[in-house]
Length: 106
Image (cartoon, rainbow, N blue to C red):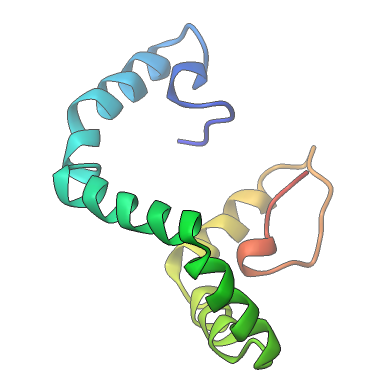
């Protein structure tokens, strides 16, 4: 299911919106649980202390080697193939020759 604006707006007012909402309520806690929240707090602390920024600046100054390797790996992921297929079925969208994390529509 593709949603724009969150689960509550998925095919607003229709059967799919109720299914999506139920899925978020019943399955969401399996994804966002105590361990996930703990890790998210660690990441927030890294951002607040500047650790994340320092790491990013060093990555940038080093030529983005790890970053580019992650992008390349991501391009091979099944979600990218699925995304390209889904976008091909959306004639109202402007076609762009894009890959990976840049494969979004503004």
